[in-house]
Image (cartoon, rainbow, N blue to C red; front, top):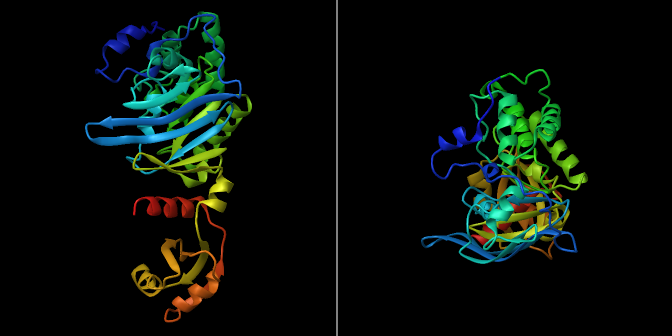
Length: 344
């Protein structure tokens, strides 16, 4: 097999598309302690402007060692921009941030080799084999041959690709590509892993298996910072940020968000009436805050301090209704309610 020369491949990339891994592994003995309280990310007032547009707008939060920290928001909410700042790839316009005890403004070059980053766009080379991709990224990380041999074996086993090492990466299924990309991001055993919508476009089964891997990494002490569009995925996070227009709309545990962020009671209304008719009947009631389709029924958000079921029953008196009952909110209910509230 022809040896892979990282410089040859990097020289062919367009400007600005050099992968995070290209910044090399930290030198021997370069490990640093950070945050006696186990904090690996600390952000205060972080802002990023593109001209007059605020992609990230005065956000503050912290992430603890071993935590699975979820970043949830619509496209354009500021999730990827935040990750790029925290990885040392993009300078903030103002605010303060520390990652692994390094300043994101003053020491970005020290952050880059100490974190793993898996982007939402598949980052491996489709024209290289599984083994060649791992050799390539292992060379970028500066792993010596014995270390690389062991880490390659781990990555292949983790990805379920034993016996397929010579297979072209471009011919792998979406789930295998995803797991191989994760293995490549973890070759140098980073303490902090950034995953930017890592399961987009893969099967539900592959998504479940991927989240099993994330849980295993967390229990072993790796901190995972993950963005996602899938509500069922972020249920697995220890804490979740809800982002809207570059700002933090809410931050809590999944249970905390369901309990505290809704600012109302949720009622499920089963009716075959179209959504426009349901809303036209219910929304004029001062007690009804929102009506959203939910499968074959509707979730109705009712003001606090009143009998929610009775309020919906009275408002829907002229509709053909099969049932009305109080329900516990899902994270999707919370997300919709919080984002609508902040964007009014």
